[in-house]
Length: 170
Image (cartoon, rainbow, N blue to C red; front, side):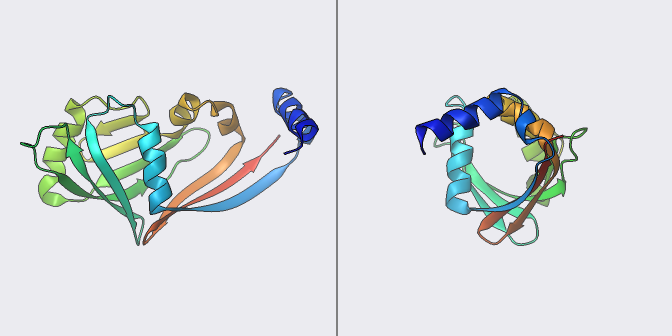
């Protein structure tokens, strides 16, 4: 990018986007399984207790999540079916809520999730996992942009996660 154009973008952002007041944008962003797993790996701290985490988007707003807790070979790998239970509603409810579907493992997984140290943007309660999108954005230095989001929907189709975002600069 041209250096002068980059400086102008920096000025617009530093000014709180007031120079583009009234702008509206809507985008649908498909994210492949590979990119999704790269993003999740980058977001998890090195101290995270989950090893070899792999998320596979399935049809119907569902995921297959596999991995290993800790580094001990005594603990078997896990595989859980997870469904999107509730979409975020900005600005009041910036959470994507996931539900563990694996009936036999649901209670055990819920207990294990409460016992392990999770990143601050992930909360678990029984068979629900809440991903705090505002806290995740804050952790990654883009929290100031959450205020512009009017709607965010997360959907899955086999092998791909789809984010649909509508944003507006007041």
